[in-house]
Image (tube, rainbow, N blue to C red; front, side, top):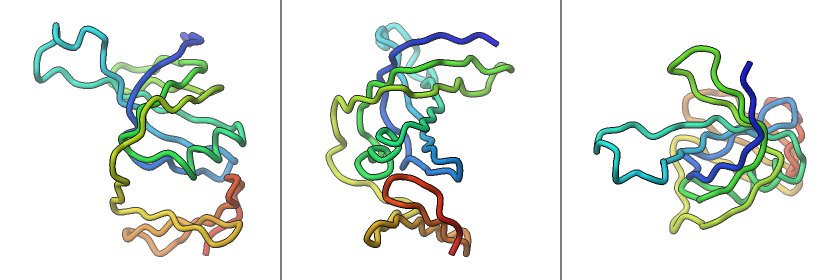
Length: 139
């Protein structure tokens, strides 16, 4: 498996999603520095990012929204098969620029005191986490 420690700048594609293992996952859209040299229909590179650091998880779940420009540093693992997304385990996160307007799509995060819940119109299950990203259970 090919791994590399690196820093990547990119835009958050969708609201970061918490997982039961005290982590948060999000997709980062990365464009090459020489974008003008590429065809107009060239696809963007998508890197799936995960962090288990409680401070980073807290920031992802409470302060990051789609369209934010981030610099993430960590260990990049190339996909085992072509066509899949590369995976980056994030060790450091820096917000370079924020999106202008908050974007809400099909899923809504809501906070009740020390708890964060995720309402998704496609499912009846409501995941519940602490504000620090620790898994509580389903409601």
